[in-house]
Image (cartoon, rainbow, N blue to C red; front, side, top):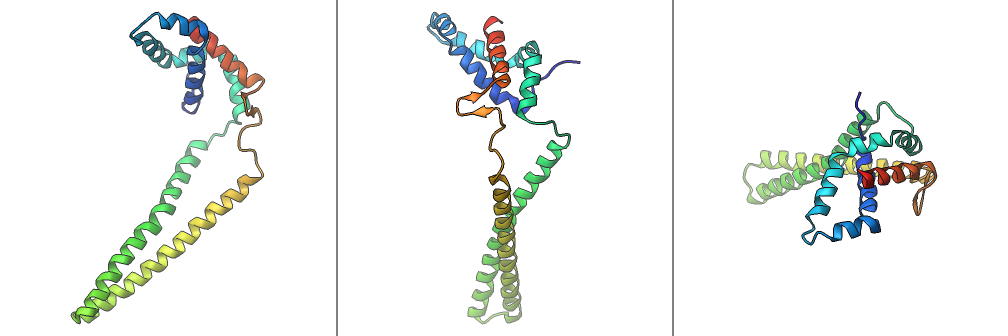
Length: 185
């Protein structure tokens, strides 16, 4: 079984890589290349070998994962369903409001022209119904956002191992180990 770095940990790995490449020893070694291609190649190689670098610090990475969040089996499914609901919450009021505006404009324009009064009445009725749907959907989306904000208000915004300077304790050990592996590789 091969060891793989989780997709959501890639940005953190890239931040550690940036720190590793910013160390004075590495900067002075890379400063010898006037074109700057060596730095780009080194960064690309480290990003390509991210799984191997993380595997070299597997124990620290496991501790990092334990600190970061408890393992949830259905997180991906929950994320997919919440993103779909979020998209619907945003799109439904916008599409309904746009359709309502178009139908109301057409319906009232036909009424002003005094032609096809039954079609004009139907368009106006459909426009007002869509306007009502847009308002109700916008209200439901607003309540959902406020409910989510109230629930998140009491909880920590970051995992408990995080402070203003970054990961503390065991979470930082994975960063140190990745830096060492990046520098020595």
